[in-house]
Length: 114
Image (cartoon, rainbow, N blue to C red):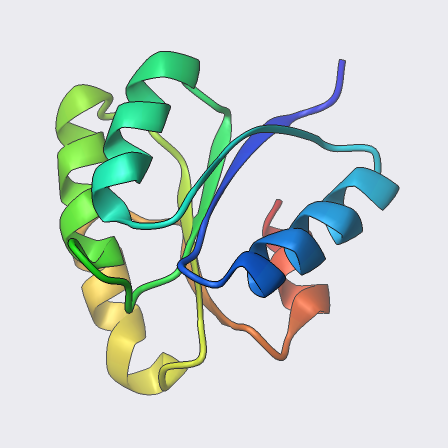
C-alpha cells in the first residue's frame, strides 16, 4: 500500500502539480486543503501519513495549522513546502515539529523527505 499524503496550498495550480508528481511516483493523495483551517479539518478526517504544507495562506498560515495538527496527533508528519527563505524559516518549522522545510523549486528534495 502506498503512502497516504495530504497537500495543503492556497494555489490550486501548485496542489495539482504536487499531486501529479506524487501520483506518478506511486503515492496516494488522501486529501487536499486550501488553507490552514481546512488542513486541520481534513487531517482529523483522513489522518494521512504525511502532510505537505505551504506556509503563507489565507485564514490560517501553515505554522499555526501545524501546531493545531500536532495537538490532534503528536505523531503527525509534516513537511513545509514554500517559496519563503529556507534559512529564515526552517527553525520555525522545527519548532512546530515538522520533518523539514523545502523550497518549492526543489522537488527532488521534497521527494527525498517523503
